[in-house]
Image (tube, rainbow over all chains, first blue to last red; front, side):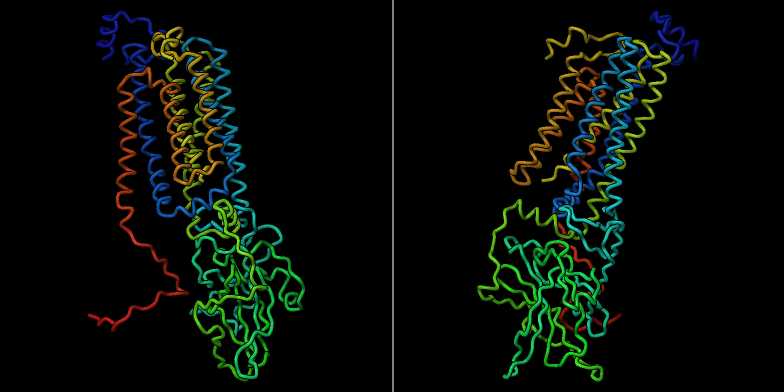
Length: 425
Length: 127
């Protein structure tokens, strides 16, 4: 075999390979370089297909659930992403320059370029680490670990398994049976009601921003009709202060603004129903815009006394989805929201369903990309060591060229990831 | 551009040597386009147009990287064939997956606490 090649070499006059790293089974340096180059291009083609699977997941989910993208992307810091993009582009430049330096036998410049590339790659990883650790800290994670403490707009979120660090307490969620909160059996002691109890189209445009949630008490008047006896605002009040304080009427400051009912995370209702006369009813009313939607699902009746356990939940709000115009003084001025304000508001509310999928895709894509960057760091360190030893010259610089090509593909993928993940409008 | 390239970047022995000016120009164009794409999102053209702008810029950047940083412009045609066929494969992948996008109804998530209403009519006989 080698005899045949040697004979072949002699035919072409390539006795001197120009580098001890030219393998004997290649005709010459050119042959070795071309073979390696074809190999790395095939590998890059495979990389494109490899990442395309994740891009398919991204595109498919974005087509089907655009709302989670427009909501969740605000958790990502554009500044961080832009810095990383610039860092990667600069490192691509230094990597390309390293190839040039190797080809021109500029050893010191080659070492400098490889060093700069490694430094940039490490900078990228450090920024990525900062982004990831922030998300881990705030529970903005993938799959079932998605349980964010803050909304993209920065408001605190009440989550079902809320164990966020800080001042927040655990919020007890009471899932209603058949749409009714089971306050009578005490299951919802100080609990919160889910947003879904408010039967409201989530993305209805132009709905008044400022919603208020009231706890209503009604009594029967002389004619036997129910009339409102008292109304107390409980907008977004949750039992962080403890139920006793709520009952004693201590003024609570809302932890975050209440927006439209549909995107309001929870309404907390203190249980004050015990030992109330049967002529009194309790309910929760949500007011927004110029209409009042009465949460018929939340209609509850006072527990009159312990001797009558068979109390039926009263139908305080007789008509389902009953809405009625309020008097002028109860009306908040309607403000037609601009698109920008809509987004701002949504980013303050809780995440729409399946938002965890955005984070899953985000972590899968940036994670796989990050692993590539990490691998690139090791490759460039190896090349740096070899460059310091002076193993590259104009006849043998294939490893530099191939690593640079790999690095450019990593940069290329980030060029797409950055606008797709960080710059969603 | 091609007129100036041939000063110091002829085929140097084994492979093409990229001209310093080309590398610098590519790098600075890429950085500028990064800045441009961030700025473009701050202006509201409507979601689709904003997405189109961002993708156009990304494709331009990618093309610059491929042509000049990755030397594909000066490289063997076969490497272009390999790479473009990978892109074609990826676009087939995306295209076939998205083909039936509009063929589905809204998915209803089953919530045990709020089961959907039972259908009207008699209960189907078993067996």
